[in-house]
Length: 335
Image: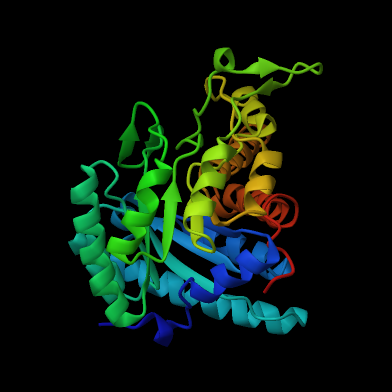
């Protein structure tokens, strides 16, 4: 058993308290490799933002669970050295399991040093979701690890998580679910979706500038949930904005991404001022990383040194993460 505290990590309790009072949301960025970790830590130290580093079950299989523990510990050490060198405050870092689907997976992550886990029982019946989530909470709380549950279903694809259509969270269920499970935060469905293909153009309207506008998030559901469980931490998954600039760069350099529209950043900023304390962003990072790599291969077709194409990808990610912290989630300056 390895405690997250020995790795220098924190759980999400104080993070969410600060976000609730300050009217911002903690960025939750998924990572799969070293360059992504470097970009997340650099951007969050420079913008002085707390951060949740997320690992999906697919990423855990890809990176190896032992390696992930050292990557989490290494991220903390990198943060400390960078903050000291730049004369900045150290930032809190949580290591979180994203979309865990079994008690055994959550237990394994907790035992290897994760400070927070999500148990996603939303694909089960309501009662089975309650039972599974409660078991994870009972285990995790023994080790002061925080737990995120989910009510409602998001459409889209993210690693092993697949759903054809969304099912909005039912506000009338949240009090019972939170009370019976003891979860520390709750992921809800109000119109976001997983993956890069969130909304097709035909599902959207167009403004005077010709920009596609997707259906608005269901803030009425969010408000009703806030009223039923006041002061409770809410999470939004599937919150990438699918920047068309990145999509265009990919397609101009040999890619074949279909048209898609993401979640408008102004709607995410509005959500971050509410009880939404955590916002998950994954696809935007994948898009910008791929865009930078493809452009390098087009501009320098003879290049074969991974540092020469992963380096620009890392820089693109740093700028994206800083933008999210400063202009979308409002977490910058809250280390």
